Image 1: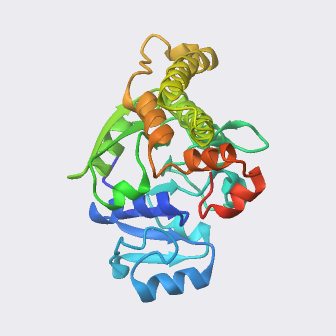
Image 2: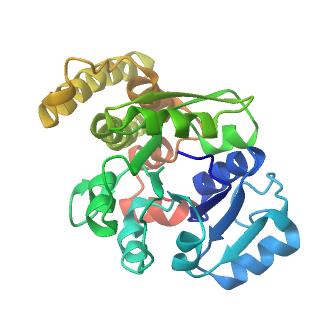
Length: 286
């Protein structure tokens, strides 16, 4: 893959903003798809995302903002889907631009609601992508810590290991270290399951069950993650090591970190909030 000098960022939340920070620091021009024009205008005036990670400053001259998802895709060699999973379908349904010859990366940790399939499978079907065109970027990586340039390790999952290595090289810098995996299914499933376990962990904290029980919960979650992923996709079972950071590391950071939205959500449930009231009080989506 040629080094992409134009990258499309699709989404404007905290993780999209953190990914955009990495992309711009690594030298690429960005087309940034943000749904609301007023958000774009505020972004241009302030030099940072007005809603998320406001401490991260951007060189606005090197960003082409657009409310047209097809304009962003059409003009770039690499397309990064970075919106929350509940909103993926409504955005993909707007896509008419061809993705021929493009690399499409999902940084979304979730499944396609209603279809109950992995993000990569959905993108392959809807955008007519080959296995070598679609990848995922995952691992223990809170957007806030990327904003602070704290050491972060990410894994690129792609069936084509050569493409995965090219993507990994593209994202690597002085605070982001990357590795590769052909286990794109397992990497995505780990990103789904760890969110569920983190909600359970938060509930236990809200109920004041203590650290001893939390350790038992997380230990069992790791075992269940291994059984579930190997049961879903046994083809990679021989080479899959759930102890690696993209599986267990992501589970741990989401279960324990103060930056974890899912842990925070669970904590509120444990303290007696209803699901709806907890959702309303949180500023971001769990």
